[in-house]
Amino acid sequence: MTGTPQYSERAFADVMSTVDFRVGQRPHITVDTEVCRSCTTKVCVHACPADLFVPTADGGILFNYEQCFECGTCYQVCDADGAITWTYPDGGNGVVFHTG
Amino acid sequence: MTRDAATGDAGRGHTGRNDAVPREAGRAGPGSRSVTVDVGTDRDFDVIVVGAGPAGSAAALAAARAGRSVALLERGPFPGSKNVYGGVVHGRVLDELVPSWWERLPVQRWVTRRSTMLMTPTQALTVDLRAEDWGRPPYNGATAHRADLDGWLAGLAEEAGAVLVTSTVATNLLRANGSVVGVRTDRPDGDLTAHVVIACDGVNSFLAKEAGLHQGDDPAHLTLGVKQTLALPKDVIDERFALRGRDGLDLEIIGCTGGIPGGGFLYTNLESVSIGVVLTLPGLARAGVRPEDLVADLKRHPAIAPLVAGGEVIEHSAHLIPEGGHRHLPELVGDGILVAGDAAGMCLAAGIWLEGINFAIGAGMYAGRAAAAAIDAGDVSRRGLAGYRTALERSFVLADHRKLRDVPGLVLSDRMQRAYPGLVCDFAQSVFQVDNPRPKPGMRRLLRRSARANGVRMRDLARDAWTGLRGFG
Image 1 (cartoon, rainbow over the protein chains, first blue to last red):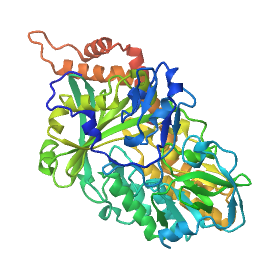
Image 2 (cartoon, chains in turn yellow, green):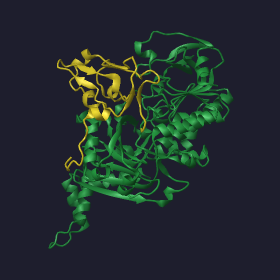
Image 3 (cartoon, rainbow over the protein chains, first blue to last red):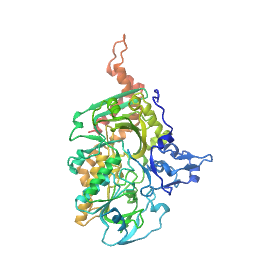
Image 4 (cartoon, one colour):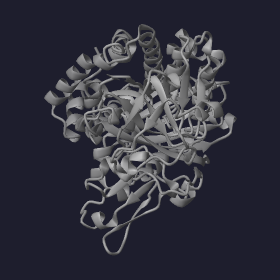
């Protein structure tokens, strides 16, 4: 869009730092990077609203579960069987919204 | 009963059997499978409600008031902690459950301005309704934070006798002879049995999927909502949005999603505003755009930037929304199980109406009552619980969805999303543009010109207008 920015958008890492995460020991979502290597679209990379899917130089995917919104977007848009193993974090862990 | 007692009693009365299941089966996710158990006739609770959102708390409240023992499970540390919505709750449905609810509802502001904005990158046309009546009892809509709203509703269920158990994930359904007889939780010895399980476990609803009530996952009917809460002083909000006291604004926006089917919103809270976008998953997948960039674009738009200037992000959030409407509702009743709220796809995303909490509360209330009635009658089979579906069809919950079943498709259609905001803005601009010394052109000519400039044929415009009129009944 055009228009003159009237404020500067903070870096996304700063925006994510506003979110309360109670990080559990168990990675509740895991990614099989071998499966991802054969994926041509890698839709998860831009669709994940927390920006947690990072493409690696060798064509795979690096995933960090710690700042996950638990929304489900990634497994819904993923085309490949077995690429994403998705579960809720254990009770009490994970994202905690205060003004949701 | 205390929370500890609720879970401490769990696991008695049956022996669990871990069938051959994949490794994620002991967790709640798309790969979850039911666990077959041997049970007698005793149950830990009459009713187990999974998820202490609006549907779950209403279900627990209704079942507890009907004299039934109820466990209300919540996977977050407190109700509302996993939940995000745009920001407006319509409380009329509460009249039946909580007299004078407006005196107790944890409101940020009462919506007295309801605006709809069509925008292009350089234009905006707004229809703005102000209704003073909505700022006093019995009110209409209110902005509220989910942590407050959901906590209040869960508190009502507790007051009625339901046992709220937080920080507890219902990972699997327990089944005996095919019927649902409880849930496995992620607590030690955490199996809980009940006559009826009410799945209010949200948009991903792994329990309803496990019960076979959904026809598979279809991302086409899901949208992703991304929202930021921006802190601003109350007097600044009052001045910018022309509000007083507890009055508030509900602004819905079309044309702000970069061509991805969806929309935007801006709601005033007491000392913050909520702003965000809602995007269909297939549209987002195709576009290759990051959701927060669209929120940033919206915040930079000339019609929006002055309203949110200086607002500091105090929380960023995201959540899926089920927007398929009536055509894509799952089965709502199974043997020993009912589904309500987002888990049943009950968000109403019908263009000018964007509602969900009220549908969740209504469905939860009828589910709780139907569960209690079925237990009283001694038949919790699909047939015994069928009163739930009947009650929903007689109420606004399914009547509204049925009536507006064609609208979600129209609102998310390509023309509505890509062409009409520009067409309407161009038309309005040409109507008010003074081109002296040329005389004013006729309206019909301006409309044709605006349609052509936005790639819309007049007959498509007429057809969509007719579909809209018919769809809105």
